[in-house]
Image 1 (cartoon, rainbow over the protein chains, first blue to last red):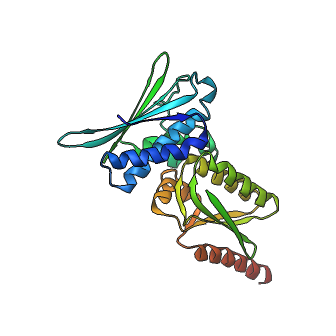
Image 2: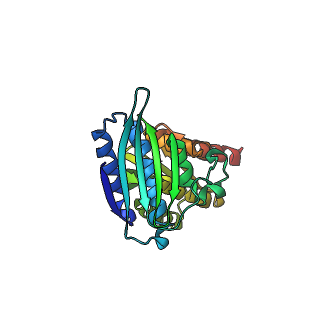
Image 3: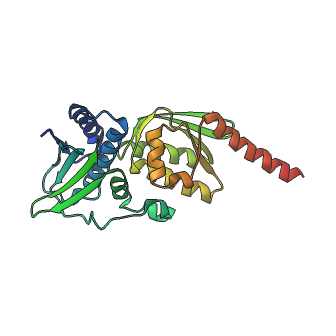
Amino acid sequence: MPQFKSNLDTQWLSKIADFIEETAHALGVQDPNVIYDLKLAVDEACTNIMTHGKKSQKKDHLLIQMGRQMNKQDRIIEVAITDFGNAFPFQKMTLPLKDLSIEEKLKNGFGVGLIKSVMEKTEYKSFPDKNILRLYKYF
Amino acid sequence: MDIQTKKAGDVIVLEISGRIDAFTSEKLESELHSIMNAGKLKFVINFEKTNYISSSGLRVFLGAHKKLSENKGQIKFSNMPDPVLKVFALAGFDKIFEIHSTEKEALEEFHEIEEGFKKQRYA
């Protein structure tokens, strides 16, 4: 499964985007809208780790793995983002983006709302030494 | 990301090229604040050459909108590519901001508002 190791520095976000785009193409994704959604969701998740979650990280990097699942009905891209910090209440954040006031939009959690808006499914699991966020997108 | 700035009367037009993410949005925020601190209150942001925006970029514009609104200023957007427009719409920003098809249209809207004020003043 293709893997990318990123420093915990927002300067690396453009490199992450390049990895997502190149790997999505290699996995057979043609639709630019699907690729944009994947880049957006991964960017938001990695930004959270690099900014809000940075202090608790026990390693100096995060990992991104990307693969695909195919059956007769569906073709799905799966992206797994692993970090080594404190767990984050990802699933609790279900923000109704459009209904938020300006003040609420400026608060943290805004990015998580975007991730959930553009992905078909998300899973967040916390382990003693790491957290894994899995993102699923049909293509 | 690259930012080109030009004046159209009392309106400042920013043409943004490339990616607006958590790293580059710091530069954008700094540029906007610097212009606002110089007393400019009217902005058009031209997104024609912008290929990506994340929530970090949206936050910058929301912050600018808040500050400008407090000072009777305004920010308008133009030439938004579909993927960028989609992110704005997902966040409900298309209800907060004026989004115009072209930079010319956004500038004309500013000038029409100005003309309207003048007519009211001298009526």
